Amino acid sequence: MNTIQAVETIPIRVPLDRIYRGSYYQMRTRCTIITRLRTSDGIIGEAYNADSDEEQDEILRIIEKELAPAVIGRDATNLEGAWEAMQFSTYDQLRDRRLAMQAIACVDSAMWDAFGKRVGLPLYKLWGGYRDALPAIGIGGYYGHDDDELREEAKFFLSEGFSGMKFKIGAKTPEADERRLRVVRDYAGPDFVLMCDANQGYTTREAIEFGQRVQDVHLRWFEEPCRWYNDRRGMKDVRAITGIPVAAGQSEHTRVGVRDLIVDGAIDVCNFDASWGGGPTEWRRVAAIAAAYDVQMGHHEESQLSFHLLAAIPHGTYAECFAPQRDPIFWHMLANRPVANDRKFHLPEKPGLGWELDPDFIDKYRVDAGTRLTA
Image (cartoon, rainbow, N blue to C red):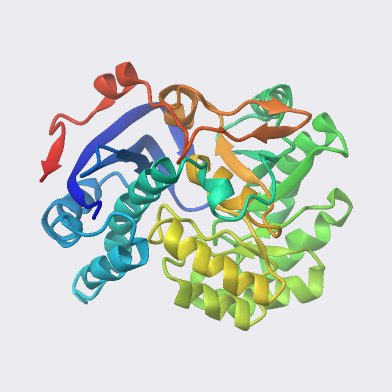
């Protein structure tokens, strides 16, 4: 039997050039955890997940103390069994369950990479192989960017072959956010796909007002338009009154939470995040629920996973990533990141995830704690 022999983690933290502000949050670092899983037949599964900063140590501790002992010695090809064996880490009601789900995502993603390498297939083919290239959108429009910077951001995404841009709103009035959005629409033209993401910043009334103001912009979707405390009902109203498709799901970290969004008719597009929500195994369960309700799938950030997941299914939409200044990990650690041809990004043909991580980048930005190995 091919068994799991060891689990290794390398925490990465990269300082950013400025503070990036959305509706009610701000980011000054970009973080991830590289997870390497070694099997008895010499295969190394490698993935990177989990962008938490302050909670990174706790996620690492969960992997080292709870998950690694649960999977070491198990059949490396029994991915569902391993996921079930790790699920106990979510049962601690005094700990934020999303931290355990991020930890599970790290191990689950590395297991899938190892499995793909073992059978000799890239994961998008193993998971369905619906297409081998996928359109992508950039994430931008952060507060603090002046009009010229917004145009430069759109220019960059256009030059790199992105199909469009997801624009941050929700901290200002609908009128002020409309003005900012139109800077990009006027510059990039009607064929540049635009989405807006309020990150739960608006009241339902404000979200509806904004949607009505930008009808002629033809948003592809309106993401997390309403505040968290009544978001399912509010999003349903935004869909019905504005006619703009609504996207959400990233703030849920299990298939159960997403199920309720879908069943309640709150969303048109589900952007559940495999890196936050238990890995590809849980994401694919969510995608199956979405297919049953004719809901499309997106993915919140983390395109190193979403390219494979979204390309594998017929109801996938766009991968997404930030500009280099906001996500130096994607642009500089991912040595063979995909490039666009005809506004579509072609996936790697190497088995597993197929990505090559730059060792120099890793050495430069690894957290001082260094490599953690459980064997």
